Length: 246
Ligand SMILES: C[S@@+](CC[C@H](N)C(=O)[O-])C[C@H]1O[C@@H](n2cnc3c(N)ncnc32)[C@H](O)[C@@H]1O
Image (tube, rainbow, N blue to C red; front, top):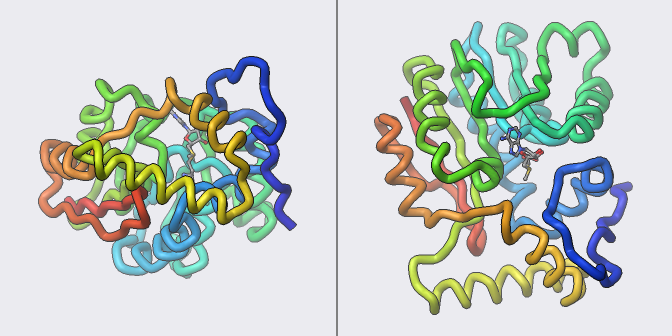
């Protein structure tokens, strides 16, 4: 059973910036399921995308892998053992739990042969011989000034025909749409059992660390990073996912 997310349930005298620490890692599956519309669908469909785009003798990178949900979904659809996975995250707590999750479905030996977990900044990791690079709700936590450079490095590290999958919470282009999207997202969270207090405190905690772009900005930036084909393939409220093919 998932540990329930109660992080913002009690009033906090001063809400501090959100961090991906051990307390978040412990409740993260529940937090994602109840906060991100479509999260489980995206994770499941990443497996389907992997069936189409993963290439033999290549590497799949998961940048900001957290607990490894995307890698596990893709692995479940790929029997070719020549395809390796590299998960990168700057949260040691997330990576510890990620390692446990990967080991739970792979015996120790297979796990070490097929998966590498790197503790560090995704902006510094070397990307080579990649057929897929997953950036699932991670770019939004990276300084906007660094986003194009990261996407360009992803493009450079992809093999021909390889794909980047970028999922993000997006902002609206105008105030009316923004109000509607925020209202729908809050409705989703309330329907999933979060209180008004939890929603408000979490919003404050994320204010300084999560900077959103519009879907149009993401698409334009992916094109500027020289991807030849860019498409939005998923949307649930203001949560979108894009594929960008080299
Ligand atoms: C919302 S979570 C991603 C969820 C995950 N991709 C999934 O599909 O379940 C964002 C993750 O990105 C990591 N992260 C944020 N900025 C990072 C950076 N610059 N380098 C490495 N990891 C980063 C955080 O530690 C966190 O685990």
